[in-house]
Image (tube, rainbow, N blue to C red; front, side, top):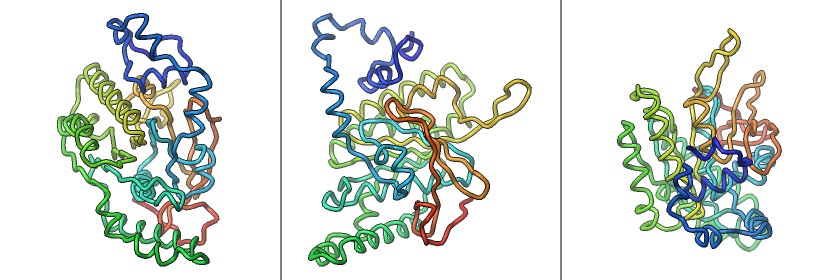
Length: 312
């Protein structure tokens, strides 16, 4: 029996999945004392949550509904229609995770797993340039400008984005299995982005029951990585149509069972000509929406003076 079919609260379910317990039989080999030894007090959990690291999205309103940005030690799913800005957000996070600690970032590295060929290195270069300029603007009136100029370079940012191009679901499984060894060797990886987690499993998988099991195993491995290395996992997802009461509606791909695999879920959508993000699932935050823009500089607040872009 799977964990999400049991009567746990969303936060309890997220904690169990993060610890690698996907099925009920996962507990079968544990003694009562071992289970008790793994217990946490409510105070421990609260302190852990308060000290959780976040990666800024470069949009204040979006960071606001996310409690400060994309959370480390958790899996965040981001879904939406084509052209809404999913890949733009993924590239932005791969850059922003590298903002030095002294300027409010994590000073980490990024892994970008590209299953669709949508990663654009020219766009990453542009976003990295803008990120450096934003930092420079903030420290312009301090004595740190010289140090900032010496330490921040676009080529260094691009060199810290480790890119994997995936052409089949078997490659995707192999790369996910390899990531623990890779991260242990590289050190300081603070985010894994898969763009998209859906593509090859929708194209090449006819056995839906097997697909569910394989995806559950992948999600379990990603949760272990997030917890072990204190990093964020961001899974970009596509949309599909679902027939409800005789009418077709857009919904995120991979079905209902997949929705339990992630800690947080963000749905990007159009509201007229404005892009919005809706926090559809969170164990601790209220469900709410915020506007955002995709500009020449990257993801920004709607009030930003940067020129907007319409992605395809």
